[in-house]
Length: 122
Image (cartoon, rainbow, N blue to C red; front, side):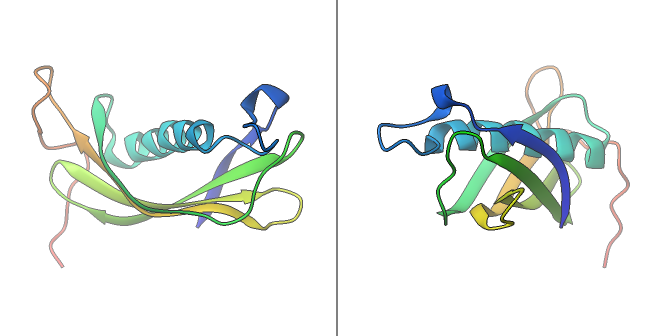
């Protein structure tokens, strides 16, 4: 797993329990994963198709720095599937894991279209 970016948890990112709001974390995760997918597919136009098996493991608090890690799972003709893990930069404890995020390369009409990477049959 490659950890490619970081975010600082600020007080305005917290929920009433004074931990990072899950929706904020998922928003960051979707954005960072989309950037990772774009780089892998050589795509400038793609959409999130699926986010599955989200597991919130440990809370994050104001002042924590989170690292976002991604791993390529598979690549189709118009899609890419990645795995993600967000961890605390200092403690290295996992904050959330996502087993599967799928992104689809689309044309100007929003229809799936082959991306720029060549897909090899196994």
